[in-house]
Length: 149
Image (cartoon, rainbow, N blue to C red; front, side):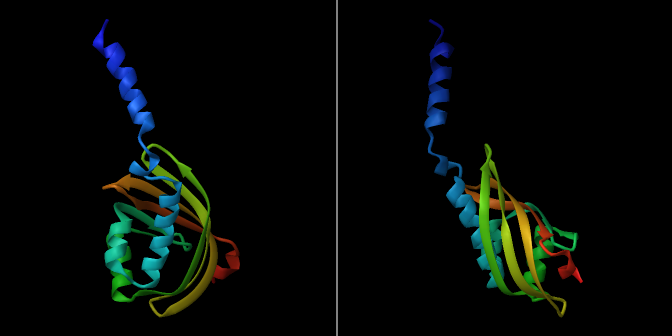
C-alpha cells in the first residue's frame, strides 16, 4: 500500500481536528476589534501596535485612508484624540486565516482641533498573524450622512 494514501488522509484529519482557537476563532476576532476601540480611546499606542497589521489600510468616515504608521502617529501625538468610543460587533465571518467583522460604532473624537461625534457601521478585516488577530483593513460608513458636515 502506498504510504501517501495513509499519510495524506491522516494529515487532513489532524488539520481538521486542530482547535479553531489555534488559528483564531469568532470570539477572539470579536475581542480584538473591541480591544482596538479600548486602546484607541486610551491612546495606548503600544497596544494599538500589536492590534494593527503592518499593512493596515485605515479608511475613516470621510473617505481618507491612512497607514498604520500614520494612524499611530496621529493617536500618539494627540492630533487624533478619542473622547468616547462604543462599538458593537454584529457578525463575524471566519475564513482560513482572516475574519470579516461587521458592526456599529459611536464615537466622539477631536482631530486637529475639530470635534465630531459620529454613528457608523464598520467593516473590519482581520488577519491571523503571530498567533493573534491583527486589523489589516478598516472602513466606516456614516449611518447619518449629515454627520459629515
